[in-house]
Image (cartoon, rainbow, N blue to C red; front, side, top):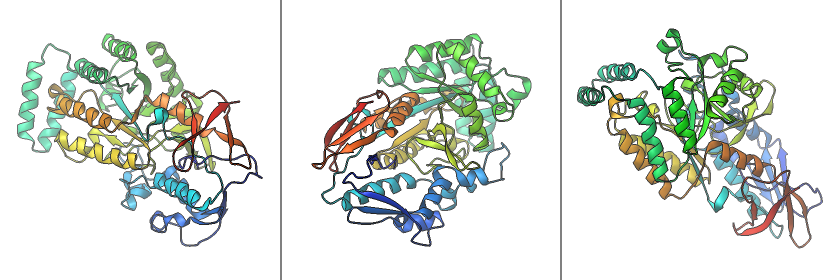
Length: 460
């Protein structure tokens, strides 16, 4: 219902289309069957029926129910991508649940007849889709170490010419600060286009062990970290926590890291993304809720790009063990630079951008949200010649498609507000009175079945 943008009505006597959850038809136990049978949604005059079995599949996909039940883990302690039902069905590049919601909307409109239909707007400012760029600050200090690791990676792949370019760029950077320059470069590119991003920052005390594991690699109170944070905040970007490996294992660590980062950033920390997208689905999310986070941005594949939860949007989290939604909003990650260069062996930045735009096109088709991750260490001295220019090209291409562009905290606030709107009454002539509990972060106006502006939504 939320993804469909259909407006729920509180008055059971209102002259509107009814939605019935039914136990038929049979044969909808798998994702593939749901997709091929259009989710079993049927309709007649003023009534739309949705099968209960299809809702179970949606919980397994969008709620990560299958992943939460899986006992399988990779060497980093993550649920392997092959356990995901979309990957198993070869559908991870499609926002199948968002498409199901669009089908529900279309079916309601077609079956409404003379009954009024009202839709909620897709995004603020009248935009039909949205984009959020995020950055994970994985490294701040000891840049030669990271260049060395990258050179070893390229050597194993036989990328000798590229290795030579990296070594030459690294030699020219001796005595400089390539990691800090990478942060400043991204801030400058985004400032040039008046765009804001969300930065996820590590905030635990590093040790030799965490450094070797690729976990905590810098000191939160170090001068370079503080300088980066100040620049990020001054540019109007959001700061979120990049949860370390320990947050998923030791009680209280999430809360301590969130509080520490808030003190350094000078603002509350609303969101979290786990380092290496390393989490125990469901269990880690309960710890996030206990620590006070409003949203999680971890649900992305580590080794490929796509729609891990089948949605191009923001949705409530799901607790499979307790069989209910939780208080954490999920903002799935759809595209990441290193999914291609590290796991797929694709070392051409232009190919990364084509992949990003392909998924962005799929998100735009469903009036959805595309979330991308670009690491600030993707510069020539650190092993990625041509990457900065590719990032600038990505920003221009995305911006040319005219999305609503926002920080994750703003996008989540908008979606929370939109989700809370209800029709208080519907008159005989079709006028709708719609309310929400508090003032929205941006003006909300209903749309009619043709997408034309209708009544305004007021706060109670």
